[in-house]
Image 1 (cartoon, rainbow, N blue to C red):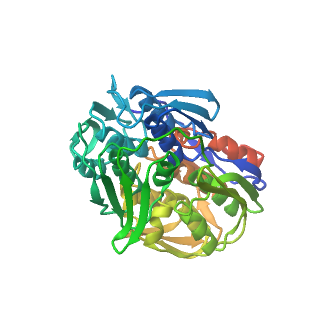
Image 2: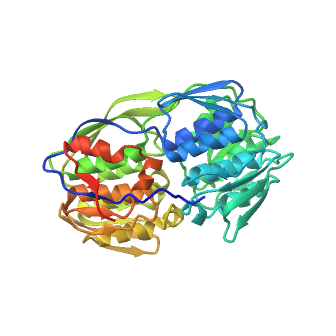
Image 3: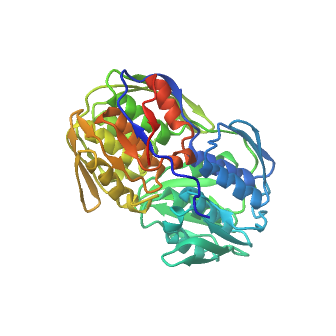
Amino acid sequence: MAHSAPSQPLAARRPAGSLSGTLTVPGDKSISHRALMFGALAIGSTEITGLLEGEDVLRTAGAMRALGAEVTQLAPGQWRVAGRGIGGLIEPADVLDMGNSGTAARLLCGLLAGHPLFAVMTGDASLRRRPMRRVTEPLALCGASFWTREGGRLPLAVQGATDPLPLDYRLPVASAQVKSACLLAGLCARGTTRVIEPAPTRDHTENMLSHFGAQVTITDTPEGRLIELEGQPELTAAPIRVPGDPSSAAFLIVAALLVPGSRIRVGNVGLNPLRTGLFTTLEEMGARLSIVDRRVEGGEPVGDVIAEAGPLRAVEVPPERAPSMIDEYPILAVAAAAAAGETRMRGLAELRVKESDRLAATAAMLASNGIAVRIEGDDLLVTGRAGDIPGGGRVATHMDHRLAMSALVMGLAATSPISVDDAAFIETSFPGFATLLNTAAGEPAIFPCAA
């Protein structure tokens, strides 16, 4: 079903003062999806704290219920999943609607491929435009059958394999979603599933597999990073504490860097080194960032991030960093717009298959607000204004929550307010985003505007 909620146009203006305070962000979306899925595959009851309760993750919770797991909310952010064991999922009675979540849809393809059941999956208008062939092609090698619309798009039907084969697959492009889908299918196969990724991508799936008792081996090889999974393990329920999402924290951090006089502390942020490329890049740009109270929770490193306003300088971002910050390029582009000099972000082909063509949409967001920007191949080049962002534009979000949040953060730092055509999709990943920034600003700097 298409997204039917009314659009929510918002605008953002520079606050009279600075941003301050200690803020917390919602739970990590990547880990939240996986916690629900692995809980459904485990024997026993998995207790989850800090789960992101945005629409994307709630769609995954609904899908796990439809597949036979018992999924219960105990309190805000606290959930329990009574699992069915590897191979124990049941055929859903109705279509699985994954809303706006590409992560949920692609990982679910892997989950379904390894179970002898038939299922149909769809999503909203944005998700139905996104290609699924990159997961369905390798998953077909395990014995599953897929039927999609032209171009490998949703709605999608799958007949899972009765006796799935272990995969031996080399990813043509580094993708945590494709890797994770292959590993999820491999759980149900006899033998060893082998996946090689050309560059390391977020490893939450591998961490969580180990956390639940699966045997996972990771080896660096000349071809890339090899992940080997022994099939048909007995996963045992294990508690999960979900850290704050670094991709969500990124918006607050960049806002604090750009609004003069600001200083904020974002608590309990996930600091998995395969997710923190943005922090590395901002530090190279001269950002005043510090990380305090580092610790490990549930197998994932976490800490508090302190960000203070100050001047930024242009940098070149290498293509090999893209997997560790693939969702952060729109907000990095906003930081680059405020920096001195020309920033080049290299190797962004993956952005063309996000919620929108995120590369083109990011360039359009900047251009409509007075920033010189161009695309060369898969590179994005932004000529910064050394703190002087003109603003005044209206941004088409293309149902992309990260683009909407990036534009609103840019509005907080711009000379003239910036508006977005629809901010409704922000709730899918960052419930309360505008309220949180308005609290930090001490005024309604983000506000409703006319359509």
